[in-house]
Length: 457
Image (cartoon, rainbow, N blue to C red):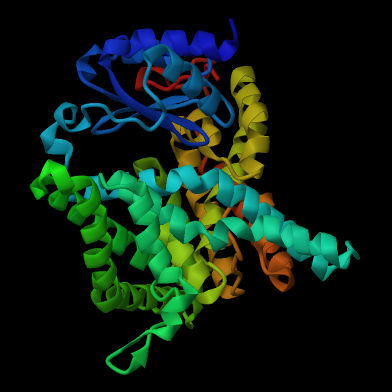
């Protein structure tokens, strides 16, 4: 039996058995499980499982932080045991406690469900694009045909992302993914330029991802209501026909223009605030508060903004700023490593620092800085200074992907040195702030067990 299967067996047992599982999904570092009865979860036993870094409560169930690689492998094993496909949500509405179904929480959950499946493609395509840009800038590859191939492989996810978002949005709102893709395709179809409304030609892609989210959600709502009222004899023909016609015209006349106004407002606001005279202050605040945002899951709401900035301006100035939070985490962890006498704590840092440098900070957050308290503040301070540098120097990323050092490949070539400077500043300030703030060094290797933290990674 593999290590991941052993972990899945133990996790399932302490979640109350397969009868208690409603649905499950995973991101790079977390396993998200929705359960019927949260009282059946044995939290202490779950946290003590070898490989579990941290438990996070959520309204629908629980999030189990396992770290990069392990999360996806354990999720696959667990889904086999339970008989629920990753991403499925059986009887979800009946199982979720009504008091937790606030509009804001549901919105974040929906955004996460729409964009999390795209993350592997965004990382892979973004890194290929970044490597290609750097190779072109420094003339590392002379073969133009090879460069064209790499450009094709890297750009495809971004070229067709609107369609994918439309399909995921429809799926999330209970509509047909194909119809969601069609509605998104209307927004990006080159034939849009041949159409005039009120004497003005329509703009292909106006509103971008924001328009897609609005239009696909509306189409799903419309489709469900049409299907309910349509006689069974003609439902199969009439529902898709009426949905595409009504939602299509609504998109052309109302939804895309509204999405365009919102998207333009987002782009102008972000660029004005960050690029203005006091932009470095904004960068300081954004990067300094991003780690707490990640812990609450609110950072998921930023994904459409990143995508919209990429579509409207070609770069996202937010991503390099927010990436500095992870760099501050690395600096803080290094300060803890230097000062601590705990062999177990040193071992934990040694096992987590590399993935932190490469942009995955959750093992350091939940395994090192957060349990110790003040180092977490030191990490936030370090990230804040790095964020100020990124904003001051106008650094932007040309794609989405991992933060840390890998993000350098996605930075505009002329700004790569500035981005790396911000990283170094975050490392140094995170180290210095943590070193000065200090922490209560554990006299044994049971780090803050009284607060429920565990180092069983």
